[in-house]
Image (tube, rainbow, N blue to C red; front, side):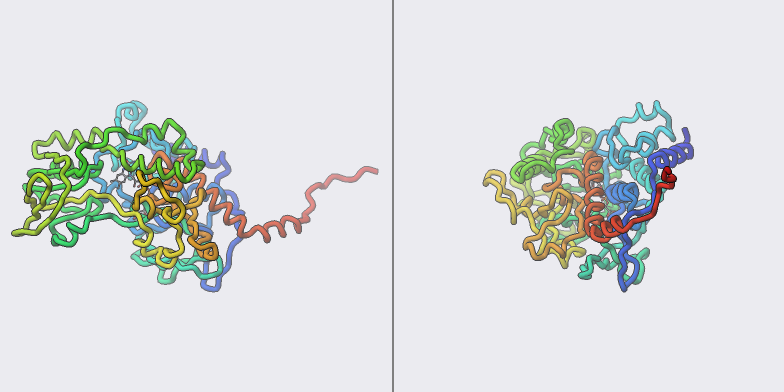
Length: 469
Ligand SMILES: Cc1cc2nc3c(=O)[nH]c(=O)nc-3n(C[C@H](O)[C@H](O)[C@H](O)COP(=O)(O)OP(=O)(O)OC[C@H]3O[C@@H](n4cnc5c(N)ncnc54)[C@H](O)[C@@H]3O)c2cc1C
């Protein structure tokens, strides 16, 4: 089968599923202009999958916005530096149960059945190409180069989205429902410890989420801080690009070995997480965060280079700038490097998100609702938003609930409340249908009165049979 034939197959499958019927949602009117039923912020895989899910529910007055140029959404071909996805190739994610929309169908259509058997994991470039195809074949309404700067409540059950960028209209956009599919950093921001950011000039370090000019680092000595998968991805990438050495510094004395995701996959914890109690949710995510090993392949690739060095039990106690280099103090000794790559992940805290500025004080956090036992209490987890099972924010104060009604969180910060449904490919299969259903339920409930009035008022005769006699 060719890609062209697969495109036909997708259209055929969707027509068999009666995809694209007339919308049922009542159009909202507003003096400022067109009101979308839903705007999805973020055109990565979550945003695309949610858009497809809403279209299947016959909610088509929607828009997806992404700040990046077309085809460069999410981490895959921008700042991710691993060779392949970390997830196994058999993953099922945003096809939403339509076999012709799976990665495997897309792959086999181009390279054949044997080739699928031959590949081990999916390369990140191939994954991005699949996402580009998915968007195109489904004709999803995505607008690129639009950054949402601020979400503002209008008081009329409609949000005003202030936008900027090459693809943005000069006027704000209006939406009844806003879905934050803003990715891994969407609930906060990437984190660089202050001992680095406060002392070093900017050209001596970069976070892994940033663009790094590896050509300029050829022949140089580089240090990487962090023991997660990205640290080893970056070590391997830097060494492949010609740095003379890459030293990875890990605070722990041992790298985690078990991978809780494996157990999640076979135990129902991915799909049924939302029915757990608060105590269980908190403890499960605490355990998951504590045990995140790098993948074997990325570690082995990095370690196979002669310039690779691993330092365990080696936190950075101090960082100084001396003679154009970075000097690092660890408990063992001092080191001098030409450049530092910071792989310390992110800080989840919605007060760091500009688009949520007007809502931030009203949004309840885990710390407002649940006090974990001292042995696992963790201020980082306490800062996550405390969401309803339907991915909605909850309010610190009941009187503010109208303010947040219509905002949905489908990014990484949903993890403590809703499990990995929005933060990892294996969760999306379960998370997207639940989110879509929640958005549709809310649109329906908001219009309940009018929908029921029309239902009772409907009096078109259908039965045309003659009465006997
Ligand atoms: C290096 C790396 C490797 C990873 N590897 C894997 C893996 O192998 N398997 C896996 O399951 N997960 C992996 N993840 C987790 C990964 O982030 C998620 O699986 C996936 O990207 C989530 O999809 P998403 O659509 O939520 O976010 P993204 O793909 O990040 O998409 C979100 C989009 O929203 C845009 N955006 C954010 N804010 C705004 C705004 N205000 N206005 C407009 N646009 C905005 C972003 O720029 C981005 O394009 C990886 C993450 C990283 C960082």
